[in-house]
Length: 259
Image 1 (cartoon, one colour):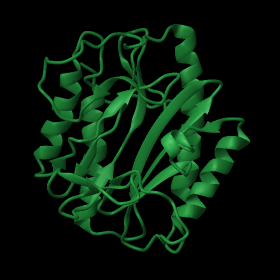
Image 2 (image 1 turned 90 degrees about the vertical axis):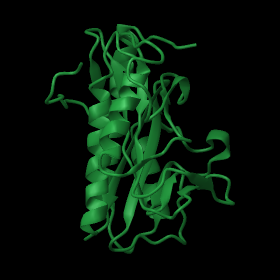
Image 3 (image 1 turned 45 degrees about the vertical axis):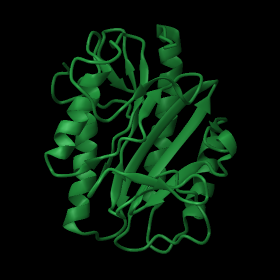
Image 4 (image 1 turned 45 degrees about the horizontal axis):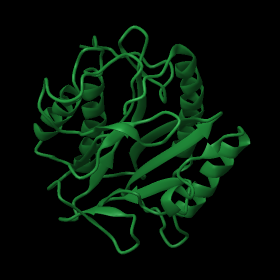
């Protein structure tokens, strides 16, 4: 069942989204060569709890950390550890969620550590732009397939692989709610979008093929061909006007009209 949020609930989600935006800005600033992914995880939990919020990833189905830190060929769900040291030239994806006053927010970004290759830099930029291509379709009356189609069409125009085995999702009081939000699809197909829908839209785009595999830790997902992958995500509400609002990017306005 898809739960539509009313104006009061949307306002609660704005607050949780704004807090997560601040947390991720601070995490982005903290990333540097030589640090461990565990250090970044500890910092994230401190920032979240400082504001009386709860790390939603921690202990979720047994997950042992507050963030996912995925490097290079790791697509998502990389477990932070003292043994993984971030190096110059790495591509690092950070995914984080929190609960504030009972309402969830979920967001992710990918950055190059120090100086990275032009090829990897383009991948990061295209992944972000594919998100914005998709979110412009998240308007009242459109379909879920419009979002996925826009993401897929843009990413594949660069020859990249759009991960299919993992999708975005609805979000609200629970981190994962209906509907699933694929990053590929047919325009005009799928669930019709309505005001009050909250969606975590999160393209995962690989330099190579889109097939993935799970590592023995039971969490980390990697590209089968070991190609670098990028991940970008925001929590989005279709607001009272029927337009997409980025809850985890407060104050951001789409430069092109949503449609």
